Image (cartoon, rainbow, N blue to C red; front, side, top):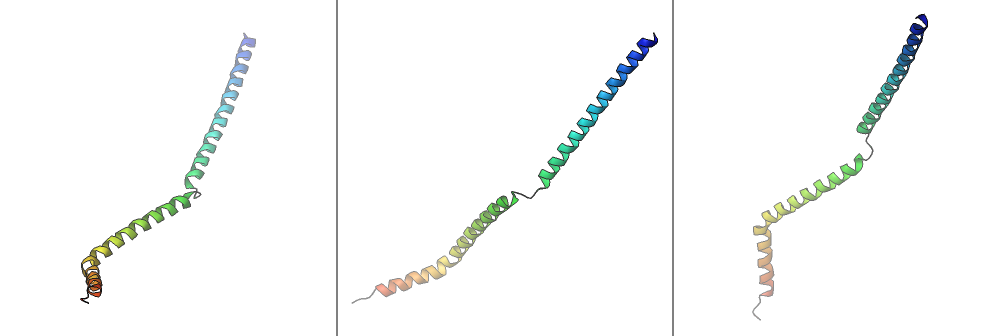
Length: 94
């Protein structure tokens, strides 16, 4: 009976040791994956492409709005005056 008890105790200790090692390996792998994900999320590489594209898009939209606003403001004043002057220049009776 004692041999059986020692045999079972030895096997249980081996299983405990095996489970403990696997648990530690899993914990280390999880920590490594967590640190890798954190590094990827806090990394600034590749951000400049998105920033540059966004800046260009903002500039294009603001430029279009500025041109539309200027055209609306000067359509009645400047373009009408310019059109009248050109018509007067070529409208001679001779």
